Length: 421
Image (cartoon, helix red, strand yellow):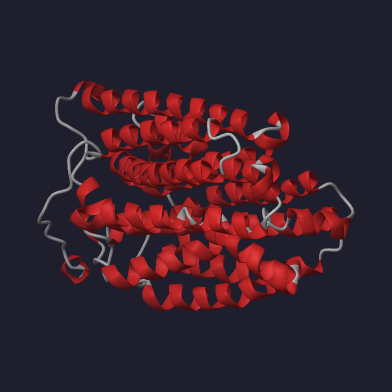
């Protein structure tokens, strides 16, 4: 019998896997944000205030969060390759249906379908990387894929603005659908076949997973996840609705502001090898402090578009390095419950994204949104410090957890065939 343990899985080809997952993550997560620049156009088309169109982003994100919860059980039962391929293929179909929406209600329904089928992608892809990428290269892999997903905040908006302005809002989804279909094929071809898995998980193992997910090491990290994408969604929605007049009234200036954050994501990837030498939890705490500073600066920019762009650059750079550190810490502390932990991570991440789209509507101005988001991230920094202490002193042990130890320089991955008979 070829019973393969998740830690004994053969390593995946690093370059092909990371590039494929990064590109597909941008396409998948980008569907969350394509509606933001389309709000004025859709408001006119559906005869509703443009602020109401923000609900389509919220509905997508909440449905995405619910879909994330299914990622763990599905990948445990069918394997990551099968689940991710099906997820992206189903999203391609759902995306092709969105142009059929004739009003806000039907658009919200179709966006909810999009979100549900897309939800498994991020948690299952992170779990796959944790299983298949050697530990000394894992921070770079996670940072690259995370930055690609984070870049979707910008890329999705740029796509929506450029295509929507030239061809109309329906073309945004008609262009995205075939790209997602190609992405599904790429996922199937690049990912390794799924190892043999048990037919079911016993109640003892399930109970152990539940205890692990509620531990002092993991629970604070799940709370930290809530505002990571939510703060990005809130800030860019607030900029679209309540930014400086010269920015809101000038599509070219708005496009430049959005695109200006992309170099920050490239820098985050280039810094990943150096940042990987810092233990995950201290790295996350320091990045959160820098993100808070960027948001505080955003609140103080006034009507200066240049100052706003600089503040957003700092914020995006910092927040894009928090996610990989949190994912690495969750994976290191979850043990056998990694798949379930990544599902909870995805759920909380996108729940925050949905809430973030509504925050500007409740507050009504950019500086207040920036300061509220900064306060949330400051609390998150404190929670990371708490999780770090729990990892050091929890369970009465004096050994450090894997989340605290810098990545080893020379691992020795074990070939999959060595564990089969």
